[in-house]
Length: 312
Ligand SMILES: NC(=O)c1ccc[n+]([C@@H]2O[C@H](COP(=O)([O-])OP(=O)(O)OC[C@H]3O[C@@H](n4cnc5c(N)ncnc54)[C@H](OP(=O)(O)O)[C@@H]3O)[C@@H](O)[C@H]2O)c1
Image: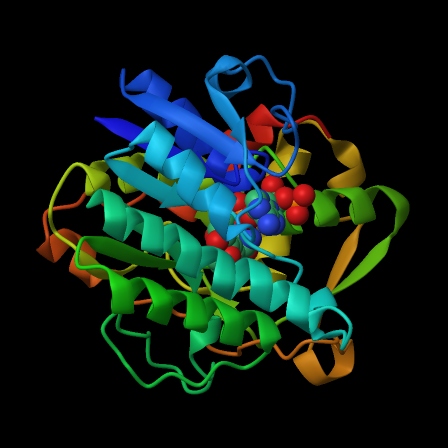
């Protein structure tokens, strides 16, 4: 079985490639740069087959995919800068990447009769209430430009294909790229008080764990919509930050100890951000077990493994 993975210079694509290698599956990676430009960490992805591909170029998408003839495309490439996406002069670019790029990939998958996994987000919903979102809920109401374009990407996949997985994830962290944990660890070094929002609730997703599940899925025909994060319960960003610093301090990084570094809860309104964020990012993951997929480990355990992987 041959996989084609977009966005391998990003967090998730990097880990999907390494997961394929670990399982002896063939994978070709792609991203914008002429050659692999993600972390030079010596893992398999750094030396696996790679093709330069700008997904907003329809002719290139068709040419490359028809040439590579994959059995599965794992589409991780996206515009993921949520606040920047709100800038008037960026909206068209965001749409090109997240909507048109996805539409071109899905079109090529249709031509090749190959499976497609599309990664999406809970930002396709309105983020209100406290009930976890069901993956088959069609009550879409994106709360910002990023969410709107990811939803239009979902619709382009579902419109063109039958053999697709639309996998919504949240609060993503991986070794290869920027994320909330790295931001907090950096801020913690230079501040003695940090304010973090406590009224947005969700669960983190470690790309290393997610990559295993995506490959499991791709090897089945249990197509459809799924919600995936780590297990371990729903928390706020504030609680997540407390646990990041607690574990970092327990590893011997004394600068994060509670008596040196204070974390204060603030509301979304007090914090203020350019793009609107969901209060309710709770994802209902029960469909995974129902369809025979192994859930991800608890986020506390994922965080512990992650902190051992990165330098800080
Ligand atoms: N990160 C999150 O918290 C989160 C939450 C929910 C869902 N998701 C979804 O999960 C997926 C993976 O996220 P991630 O965090 O791994 O993303 P990421 O780290 O931002 O990686 C995305 C990659 O796509 C590349 N890319 C952008 N435009 C492209 C284009 N026109 N052609 C080819 N490649 C292009 C990016 O390159 P540049 O860096 O050069 O732009 C980057 O290497 C995405 O679909 C995202 O929407 C992410």
